[in-house]
Image (cartoon, rainbow, N blue to C red; front, side, top):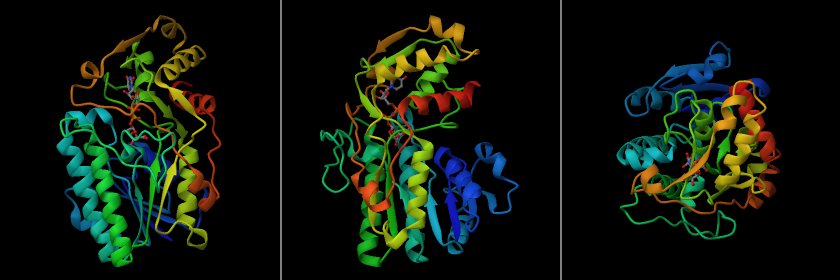
Length: 337
Ligand code: UGA
């Protein structure tokens, strides 16, 4: 099988590529990306063909590669909340417009597509667990620009779904819930407020800066280790008995619930185990900051985000196995060992 991974140089793309190259000898990858720093170790592999391409500029290249693949993963996207409020039009351009074009080509050339939706589509849904079939997708007012990412992804989910019904597009939508692991963000140059929360806290400790809890840190997230996420993607690619066709799957770990404050405390505690961080970790303080001061007035947040993963467990015969202490340790080992 020939798999086209657009955005193979990103966090999910690099881990998915690594797993395919390591354990799936009969799958070949064409990897498109604007950068290759996270996939340098794969570049010489005979089943990994990297082509430098930008989804907004190199349209011919992207369409050409799409024509000759069996399956496409459009993983090129900006998924960083500070960017949603700082540059919402960039989010629209890359995440929505760039990917809409890829979806149209998948329809035109009759290709199977596995598309990254997001936990963010549920927005401020108040359900105890977010369910793919029954939960409402709730965004705030237009002035709260944080939701442009959520709405862009939701719209693409709806477009893909409609093409499935109307044009027979073969698709699977997966919704990552706070996937964490090596290579998530560059913690060595992360500016305050520029990364996702785990990378941000690691970066703060590394640079001896206090940790900011946005609005007190009582927000709750379920963190999922990247290898568990990738294991679900492999099941989706395999698609035994067409189990993934026309389906939407939450891919997260509901057992790894933490408030952001608990996360901060844990990370500081764990930092004490690493020579590089031991001394500096003793001095790090946890402080609180309003979301308006931290992200800007156009930010808004979801207080609790827990996935129901019954569907993925049943249909894909998958379940996440990496607990929260282990996922933080593995991630921190990567950066600090
Ligand atoms: C994330 C991002 O939108 C995407 O990476 C992704 O699509 C999706 O959700 C996901 O991975 O499930 P969010 O969980 O809000 O959204 O992103 P983080 O930046 O990791 O923030 C988590 C929480 O930590 C937020 O409540 C945020 O306000 C808080 N935070 C973040 C702090 O308290 N301090 C910080 O320094 C940074």
